[in-house]
Length: 355
Image (tube, rainbow, N blue to C red; front, side, top):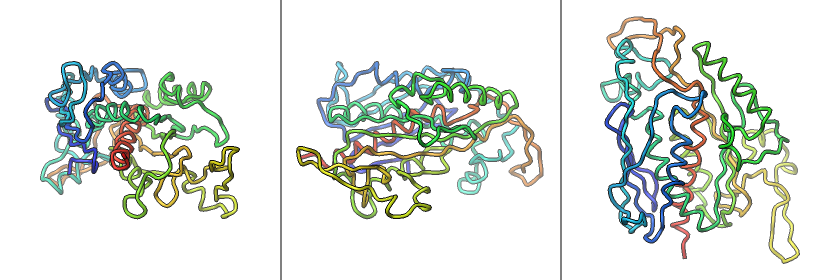
């Protein structure tokens, strides 16, 4: 299935080494003026070749809209169709490994399910697929902004380097840092680590944290369509994701109820608020009105130039060394992807909750 969402629905198409990546976004109301510069800025946060910490593949990721917008780029209410051309494809980089199952990739599982592997650029399992999500997410962000909803993703750890729990950061500045970690000291350490890992022909994993402000109390459904469940589903659909943690997540398993519960109080105007936010802004699958917070864990990029043991599609043992242009840490560019897919989830619930 290549469609995501219930009321705001995104269908994507395209492959890493095909002509391009595209999508059809349905459910955005008419009358929304799209800021193209803001949209392309978000695409720039995700695109490769933007810094020494990312793949050197050179893609401009310029978006061509095919329908759903007026000449002044105002939404008409019709499906918004768009296309992003692949301009820097080098399929020949994969000639030597075309019949080998690359460790950590979807080659083997695709071969079992579809009768072919993804060896040429990764196909639909490539991070290139997330281009379509970022276009749609950038549009959803502009709609959410009308309700005062802001999404702030940032890197909180890479490898063994991590922000201590008590460290205060300004997530609004994440994109000011090459590592997307809004802490000057840790940003420098992460840059050194990733540069060292890349020089060794290896890769490293990382964790993207995300804080959402402005979501009112009452969004979400109580059982299978919990807001927390839909966010987890969305994050786990991103290629390379291996873990999701909501609020204090796994740490709550070692806490007592008296510590984990978020006590409540009343402001002077009589409105309720929470004295802590261990729950991450959602209780019973429904938003509390407090900031939403979650973390998403990305595995190390599986394409590395170090020798690895594998087998071929015709059943022979082999050693593989993967050439090509790959991110030493996919979590860095994934910050924008987390922002985009979060926006799509929230736009879906906003469509459901509109009066």
